[in-house]
Length: 371
Image (cartoon, rainbow, N blue to C red; front, side, top):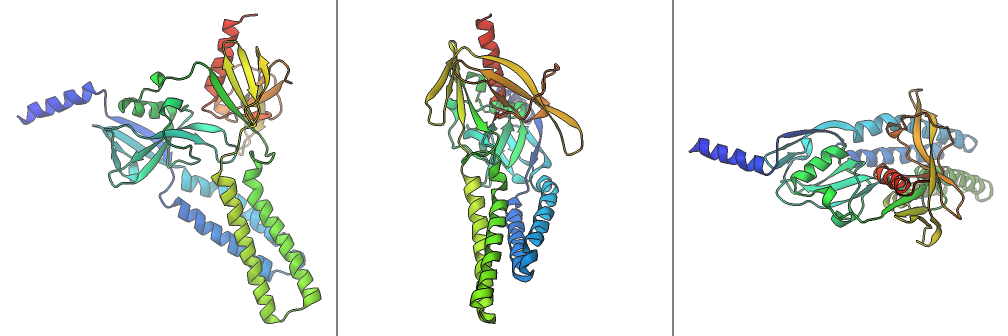
């Protein structure tokens, strides 16, 4: 009887299409946010201590040295906290998420978009898996586009576990969620983000807390100089002023980080492709150009941290009544295989999830409208 039950169970598993599957991935440690919070407190306390103890003419150099030290330690600490190699196992409708726990794959899971917190470009798809202990673990598939029909949760800027797009697609197929049959719209819509910050999006979001630190530090140093020269408070007044300056510094940094990282940057332009051509829309969705597009391939060469020369794929797109502009994907693994002309950094950025649909739309239009 036990053998018959085992055979019947194995047949049910095969009938469902679920085979034992091992998925490599990377994850952040469960206490990563507490590490970041603790290191941020140490950083703020160190900056405040330097401002309060170092003579005013040397405050700027002391804070600059602290900032340089923290930036040098950022890369190894980020890899240690957020890129730890793990293995996910899918067997018998159960998903083992390494140290995060296990979850049952017997019902659909919420799905949404995953975007970069600094540039705003779409990185892929994230599914919210609830473990047996009740914890929600966000598993992101980098480069996998989220179908509009299956997006049931708001977009998120961070994930707990990162896997490849192929592996996440296989897991979703086991759940009966076939992305190829999700009812994608006939047209293709791609959002473009500025490469630099012009107010609401771009790389300035990354350096804004440091700029705020410099601004508050210089302002505080100037205020302390004026107070000592004109007011000349006693020991108690100087201590109160010093603690007030430290409090203002900490509040300014925390508020700046919260503002720059909680909201998604808004796209500068959006492209809509249909059988008739391409429509370029501005931030407010108003069409500013439309017509048959022409494009050519370029590359953006650069030198990585290890000194190796890399190249990222770039497209120069021209739409009637609009000046040609460049857009690219800042990931060298998607570089063109053929040798193409070099160019500077692209004007607009596209995420890995939007890059394949963009190229498919361009190629499809050329095939349907040969010159």
